[in-house]
Image (cartoon, rainbow, N blue to C red):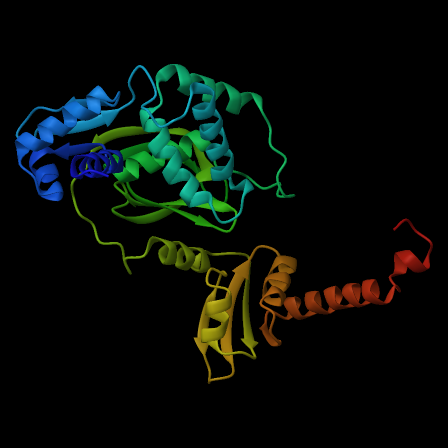
Length: 332
C-alpha cells in the first residue's frame, strides 16, 4: 500500500468517526499540510464519497450519503442485506454483538443513499424475526441508530418517556453513551430539566427521539464508566422486595463471574460476602440468587425463604419424578 493510499484510508476512517472535522484538526491527525488534506478530500470525492466542505471559523469537512454507495465492493442488494442484518443483530437476536452491530449500523447508514435507506426501512417493517425465546420489550432499531448518532455528534435529544410505574414525561437530554446490559439497551444522558445524570431504558422511549442542537459542555459522569453507572443505577432502583443474603464465596469471585448482576456486594471475609438485591417478584429474586452458582443463606425478607423452599420442593420433585401432577396422572 502506498503512503497516499494509506493516508486516504486513515482520512476516510476519521470522517466516518464523527460528523464534522475542522480542517486544521485533520491536518494535525494526519500530520500533513492543509493543502494535502484538500487534495486527499478531492481524491475521496473522485472515488465516489460525498464529502462536503463546511464554512465558518472552524470550517472543515463532513461525510454523508450521496447518490450512490461508496465503493465498498457491495452492490445495492448487498448493502441493504447488511443493514437489515445489523438492525436484527442490534435488536439482540445474537448475544454479545449488539453494541458492535449498532456502531457498524451507524457508519453504514451514514453513507446509505436515501433510496437504499427506504428499502431497509421497508424490509424492517415488513419482516419478523424468531429469536431465542425472549418475549420482553425490545429497543427499536431506528431509535438505536438515531441515539447512537446523537451520542457521537453531541446532539441533544427530545423524547417521551414512560417510567417503571407507567408515568409519562417529556425529556430533553444531552446523550453520552448507549449501554447494552443483558437483553436491554440503556441510554446514559444528562437530563437538562432535572440537572442530573439519568439512565433511560430504550424500550420505554416513545417513538424515535428528535435530535436538537449541538452541545459542547463537557460533563463528568460519576465513575467515568457508563456500563458501571447503569449497573449501579439498576441496583439502586426501588423495588417491592429487598433481599439481604450471605453468599459463601468471595465478593471478588462473584463480581468476576457475574459482573452485571443486579445488586451490591460487600465483602465479609475472604470466603463470604453480603449480597443486597431487589425485585418486584420473589420468584425472580430466588432464581437470580440461585443462578449465582454458590451456597447462600437468606437473611430477609422471610417471604423469600418460603419462596426458596417452594422452588426447592418443585425442583426436587421434578428431578425425582415425584411431582404431584405426575403422581396424579396429569399431562406432562
